[in-house]
Length: 195
Image 1 (cartoon, helix red, strand yellow):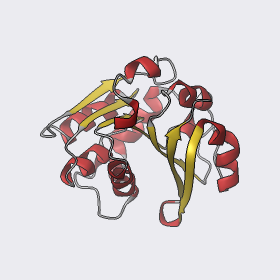
Image 2 (image 1 turned 90 degrees about the horizontal axis):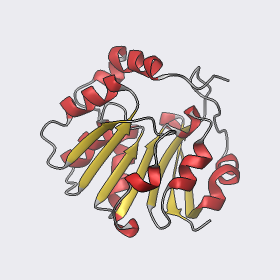
Image 3 (image 1 turned 120 degrees about the vertical axis):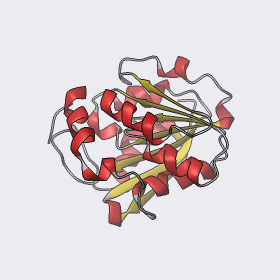
Image 4 (image 1 turned 120 degrees about the horizontal axis):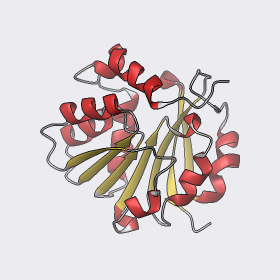
């Protein structure tokens, strides 16, 4: 099992990784699955916590998203790449911020039923994953992913749908969990409950 890593750890990954620096994400990859799942929620305002270098945003606007996208990450390298990658996106904004230290609930300022929160491969990296989820306003649509493998930056990982349900289920109404074997990832959706 890994440890919670500082921003520099991710700055180095985002600066050197071939996958994160691909200007055009391949069709059928995890970012496309996340983007299309988020678009299916009909939320016209997206908050992507742990947005990395902006691939999900790129896919969403490429594939017809017409709403507002807000990407948040504590890696300055990731945010710089996201801004470059999405320079022509009509309504995309990117913010450098430590998600575990920010007031998530105040940052999300829109009508909850018209809002979707994406969190891609973030929850496994931080100790305050439940606190992050609890800070999301009631009624907001959720699209999250978590991996099934260990990594130096993972403080936890998940090997079953039951583990995800046990950890997050009480905070999510209509929880739907699917395993994506090609990506070695679980994707789960629902609506932030009133608990």
